[in-house]
Image (tube, rainbow, N blue to C red; front, side, top):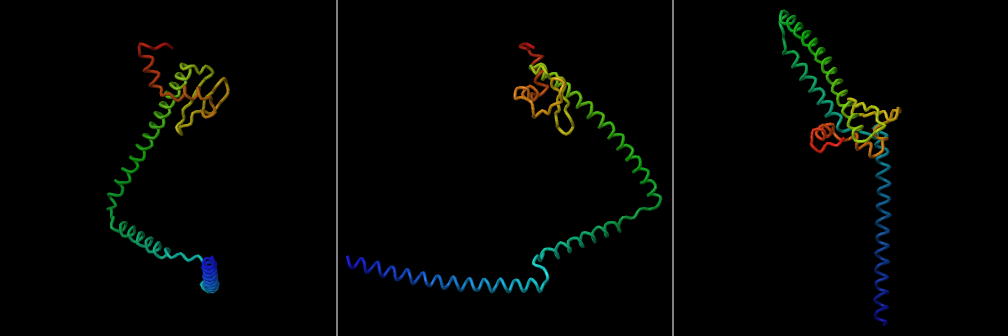
Length: 183
């Protein structure tokens, strides 16, 4: 039993010495950190900023190279004055064609959205959404509906009403053409 006690005492002495050594090392490291922090603070104040952007020179070099490339590219393009007027005419014709195409595209998109809105309204009513007066599918994919005379957002509808509205209009067309159509 005395051997166990002496072994324990020796272990306690060794652990205590190790703790004291670790404490001394920690104190030295803490002092070194404080010195380094102070030196960093002094150096930062001497430079005038603590936020040094080391990548900035590279970004500036890239911008300069890009600008030089653009200047070189534009300096190589030379158009005779007679060609310039022809090209201006072509550009004006293309701009006019673009405007006409945009007007047609907007008109066709509006017509398509109206057709889809009509199909969605009919589908909802056919599936039992009795209070549905209208559903207007918009180009931004919003679907405001009029339910019982009140405008309502699609997300505010009951789950059954959402299901009736969420089915694709082609599903109703298919159901109407099938022999099992019961609506």
